[in-house]
Each structure stands twice: as C-alpha cells, then as structure tokens.
Length: 471
Image (cartoon, rainbow, N blue to C red; front, side, top):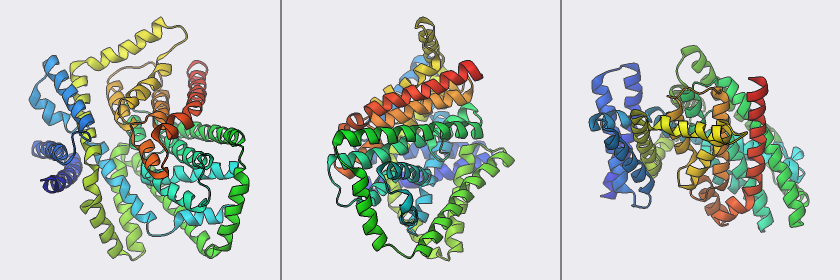
C-alpha cells in the first residue's frame, strides 16, 4: 500500500506542477479542476505514505484550515478547489530547484574552489569566512542540502579534528551561512515567496539582504574567534596542517582553475537569465525560476554530451528521491489551504491588527520589531521558516502596511534566520545533528543563542534607521 501511495504521490505532484504552467499559459476551468484534483490526490497519498508523526504538522494545518472555514461560514467546495492551489508556484519551485544539484555531481567544483583558494584560507578567520561564502553559493543551488554536502567536504579536509571545539567551528559556519541565505538568495523559496507576494523590489531586496548577510557573516567570524579563545585551541595551526597535506595531494592546478571558472560561468549564467526574463517578460519570480533551471540544466548536459547522465539523474530523482518529499509538499499544500481560509474569514486582518495594537501600547515598539518573533515562535512549534513566511506573507499581502515592502521582507526573513539557528524541530538543525553526531540543542541553542541575539539587534538597528531616517 505504501509503495502504491508513494508512486501515486510522485505522479500527482508532477501533474500538479505541469498543470500549474498549462493553466497559466492556457487558462481554462477544466485545467483548474485537474490542477486541484491532482493536489488533493497528492495530499491523500502523502497521508497514506507517511507515519502519523511525520504527517502531524500537515494534519494540524488542515484541521485548523477546516475549522476556520467552517466557523467563518465559507463554502467547502471553494475551500478544496481554490485552497489546494494557493501554493502552486512555490511547490513547482521546490520540485525543480534540486535539479541544479545534478550538475554539482558531474565535476569536483567544490574541491577545485578550495584547492585554488587555499592561500586565502590559511587562518581560522579566513577559513571560516571562506566556508560561509562557499556554502551560501552552494545553498543557492542545493538549499539546505548544502549543509550535509559541505559538512562532508570540510570534515574530509579536517579529518583529524573531531573535538567539540572543531565541531563548533564546522557546524556553526554551515548553519549560520545557510540561515543567512534566507535574506537574499533568490532560489530560497521563502525569500522568493515573500518578495513575490509583498510586491517588493527584487533588486533592492536582494541588495539589502546581501548587505545584512555580509554583516551577519562578519559577526559570525567574530563569534568564532571569541569561541576559539574560550576553547583554548588554535584553529589556525590545525588548518595550516591540513592545507599542507592537501597541497601535496591536490589535482593539477590548471584543472582546478578550469573547474572554478566553469562553475563561475554556470552561476552567473543561471542568475542573470532569471533576472533578465523576470524583468523583460514581467513574469513573477516564482514563475520564471523553474523553467529556467530545467532548460539551463538540460543545456549543461547536452553541451557536455552527457545525455545518458541526464537520463540517469532524472530517473533517480523522479523515480526514487521524489517519494521522500511527501511531507514537505503535503505541508505546503495544507499551508495553502490555511492561508485561503484565513484570508476568506478575515482573521488575518485581526492578527495584523493585534500586532499594531501591541505596537501602540508598548513604547518604542513598532511592527517591524515584533514581526521576526512571529517567525521564531512558530518555528519552535514545528513550522519551518518557509511555512511560516508563506503563512505570514500570504496574510500581509492583503493588508495595507505603512512600511516599505523591502523592510517588511527583511524583518520577516531575519526571523527565519534565527529560527533556523535555534529551533530544534526544523530541518536544517536536524540535518546537521544527524551529520555531525551532536545533539540538536547543542547545535542550536548552545552554539548559536548569543549569535542570534546579536544578529537580531544588528538587523533591528538597520531597519529602524532606514524607517525613521531614510524613509
């Protein structure tokens, strides 16, 4: 039964993505019905395939959405037909983005980058900074899949460094850098969704988020340096020891440089194509990214004359890997139904009004100060930053706010950064803990609480300055 339901889920979610674009290009009632039915079938198959524990959050969201719809007196027919398609663009994005990872498996791009840059990474601060930068680039392609991938590479490089101090050094560099990508990386679904639905300037929001991300990286480097003194260990000496070993056994320097240049061209070509089509065609960001990724990936394999490898990668992804994503997609389908019911009932306006009321009764407090805690609080209830931002942005898009959309996006995404760093029940920390063997609380609260507080204050200083002085 589970094997049948897993296959049914893969077929239904793929049909859902296909119908998303067909109904966008050729609007028709029949197409919308097929789109809705495929979403319903996907969530039913996911419920059968998953354990009750794994399906508990989607079930909670579905129950909450149904209760809101019934209490508000909304029609159940519209609830199922229209609610199930609220996340159509985001689900399609999440379905396609991992395809980029096929390219990274073809050549040793990451190894080559580290080999070429080893002279720039000969101290603990430089190495920590470099790892965070590289991980942000890889996260652009692989999302949170960059964490175990980069950890294995760094762990191989620092193969003899196994103490808690070294695990702090490796783990925080990866977790913090990934968390900071939610501020600016265009392929991060939560960021793309927030920009798209709050109608924020794409270029302005990316530039702003990149600036804050760089500040967050420098702050992380300072914290790592401070912890190095507390642990009483010389990270720089250990790194130089491993660099000497690496240089002696490295591949041809010309080959490494060729891989680095090739990777840079790939990165720039994908990023620029998305921007150009977004600007010239007027399509939303979530509509542009998936087809560009598909065409770009296929072009890579065809230019390399590796069509057989493309077929194998596609077969593995859609035949095997996809069935393990049922929890993720069912959660988004359920979140879409909750957004629909909340917007239909008007509850969203009451929730936002309560935040504004809190702003009025508490001196020196405004909406942008409170908003990050919404994401953080819901993250501790088991909702990841993507789900929370989908919920909050889905509500805020129907509310007239006095603040610039770019600052609202930054306020929300700063909350997602902290949620990724601290929440013990969302995926990035769970993945890191499974990879490095430390407890979730150690990787989260123990390693990152002080950094999270400092980061929140840093972002708020920027936001409040921009709101009161610039705007």
